[in-house]
Image (cartoon, rainbow, N blue to C red; front, side, top):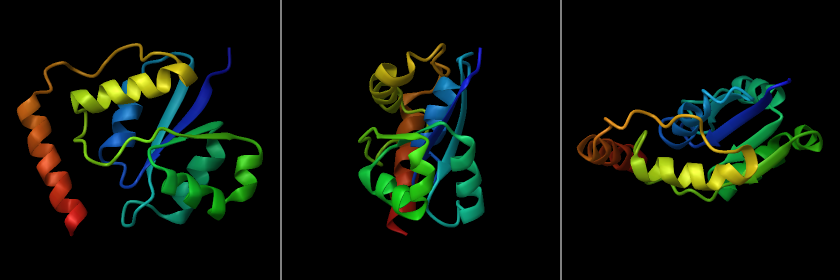
Length: 138
């Protein structure tokens, strides 16, 4: 059976899309990758090749969907794009982010096979969130 190729996209591929990739990487019927759109994390060629590889794209916010469609309109003649409407205020592997991603993605690609380690503490999530907030202000 062919595995569906899924691309998760957010701004920097540091928190939301990388968490989504981690969440779904063990699903045997999916191949997953993640991508960030904001420089310096993205090179146009990397974005294009990731998009070309994918069959279905999930973005976290509407502006990411608009950017991809306006930049590579022909790519979306043959693949589906969905916006999950998940704001950029979570840390990597934040339990609330994991819950939001799972709830948003399950209707499209099923439930994750295995959640990331429950040892990820709320204290670590808060530290990562503060780092993310500082990074976004820069």
